[in-house]
Picture 1 (tube, rainbow, N blue to C red):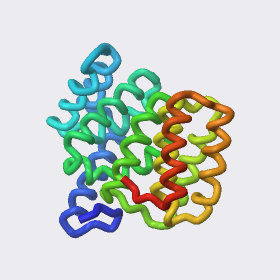
Picture 2 (picture 1 turned 90 degrees about the horizontal axis):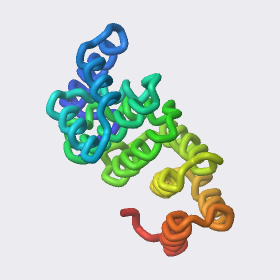
Picture 3 (picture 1 turned 30 degrees about the vertical axis):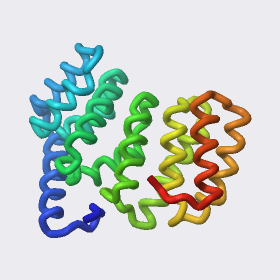
Picture 4 (picture 1 turned 180 degrees about the vertical axis):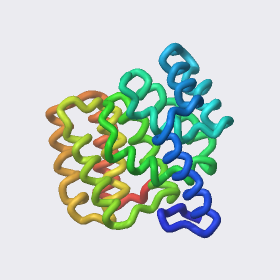
Length: 214
């Protein structure tokens, strides 16, 4: 059953517990947070996302990983988001109670390196129905995502995921569908990287044919 922000009693209990953990983490210095931050700060290389993603899932460090997305050290924020992505894709059910916190992070996060992981995760949540935002939430997501899509410094990979998120939201928000195609065509001319031209071309074809979402 799709996870929304109005979950069943069991999901609500899990969500409340998750929110309580986040509040405790915000209110005090927590050893697991500091330890995870230190590990991410000191270690980088092949397999980093899996090593720390496994730790996040096995030790239930979802709140710590979410909070670390705002770490003052941009490297830690990026690596925490990368590891969180691995943990999410390999343990989605365990992450579901933290989707409301993830949603808030998505709106606020300003680390360019973390955007790639957050947009990829959000796109998957929307496609799978793990997160079904209400009208107001969908509008805020669309506004944030358009900002990413048209940002002068946004990397191609983030633009691609941002475009997919907006495509997922377009059936619910008329203004998204009205502007998305125009932006994609413009960027294919002004930012003609292989990733942009290839992916945008396919997405525009899906939009023209009314193709189903993935």
